[in-house]
Length: 426
Ligand SMILES: Nc1ncnc2c1ncn2[C@@H]1O[C@H](COP(=O)(O)OP(=O)(O)OP(=O)(O)O)[C@@H](O)[C@H]1O
Ligand code: NI
Image 1 (cartoon, rainbow, N blue to C red):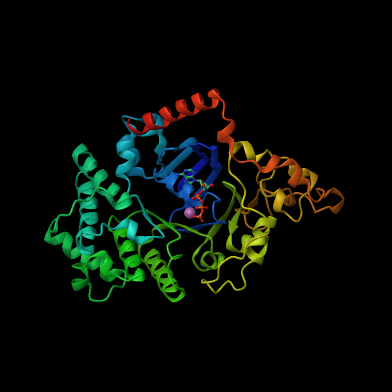
Image 2 (image 1 turned 180 degrees about the vertical axis):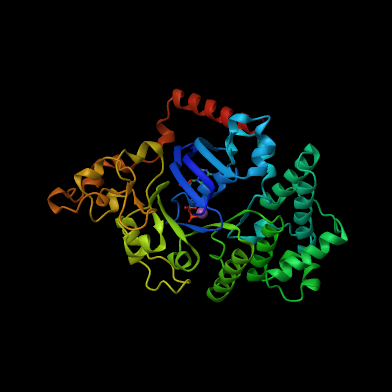
């Protein structure tokens, strides 16, 4: 039996926008086992990136985690925080929401690392790739040399913020130490960059897209993270390079045993890389299980729709054809308390007008679906009448809520906003 490295329970992440409250992630549960590759797949806007960013505490105003627990299995961290924050610790698990932000952020780069679709966002254009990798290496060295020192933690915070958010690195024109320079070159070699000694001294713009993607992976690996979150890591690349980068991730995963949370809207990528998968729709995981649960024994018509829309699972370059209908609005006042997919679902029944819980489904013990079809056969006699949702669900098609906003709405938003921004400076 493998153990969970990450347990997410009841996670809700909202954005408080002028148009209203966006329920980007809603009451989401997730268990990720140590050493597995877990995939999250879904159409654009389903909440994949917000889920990932919530896990590593990268949600910015006007967004906020409003509910839920994110627990990370790390005996060392548990020992470190148990004294000051006993309520945050349960065995080897630490509730990341219940520890101070400064400690949580110190986990970035070392416990959690992230790679993005767009590698440019991970590199400062005015510093050589080698120097930036060396700085990422230093972060890890400092953090592990002296985990209790506030100074080390504060510094690593700055640097890993720099890695993620880019803005704070200053042009330094020198390596922190010869040792970290050597490690940077090793990392470039590890991710398959030819002539790493020379390439280390080049600037990001001198790299091709695929090479920069590799360099970003090297940067993410510099801190030897336990969990690597890869958000559409190959979407921007052409098909051949995509395949190479996926192979690289696969190899690195095998060598290091790290856990990967892989986010993509490409089921071919899931099929190739993952052990288990969660299908996301409208801020929820609507079906989850092993690859064979989801690819061969799927329950949810949304999963079926995704599968039906890819011609060839081996062809990682193929994009999903759109499922008919619109990606749902995640505005709280437009979502309604029904199955969020019902308006696009070819099998919508009366039962679907109530929001379904997650049901266990046939297949592996991991297989679950948020769909009544896990419990009952489709019955045409109960089908929701055609056109039903056009009339009831989208009143007057008016999304310009702002125009009719009352003073109360504005006051409430101001209060929420103060709460959100206040929370960031604790
Ligand atoms: N900063 C923000 N402000 C307001 N709404 C946001 C913000 N970031 C994300 N959202 C909303 O949260 C929802 C989920 O977005 P998310 O980026 O997680 O989708 P996704 O599944 O990653 O999509 P994609 O495949 O396009 O990357 C969307 O409705 C999006 O508009
Ligand atoms: Ni995304």
